[in-house]
Length: 168
Image (tube, rainbow, N blue to C red):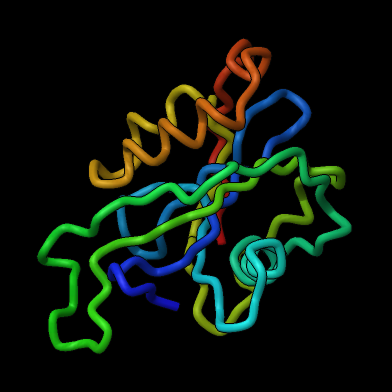
């Protein structure tokens, strides 16, 4: 769903483990890493989109996570001109996102990246929250910083980085 200003409604997902690290995933066949995210469909609430995207992108059911919090308002970023599709109607100039912080309450072996016909990611790892905004593609950095500031308590910032990567 694209609003009258050209922003596509979307959810962003920060999935935490017991150590306060967040799931960080690599885009399929690319070098870019990010948090899972996805569009909100017509007649779908942000929370419904959250659980659909969670299943599609990382293979987890709603029963596998606890919802800790969400952002109070939409956070927006603009797409670079080369990623906009001027011939589409309506033209999408960026994303507006509601971000959710979740806690994984099952074993991490339940995370599966191949649960949809078109997987989005081919690897994942746990990352320290404070490293995410510096490592995501530049046009998403401001939104990542805002979402992290709003959702992550200071205690999450005191854990060590686990750089073990998981294959598809």
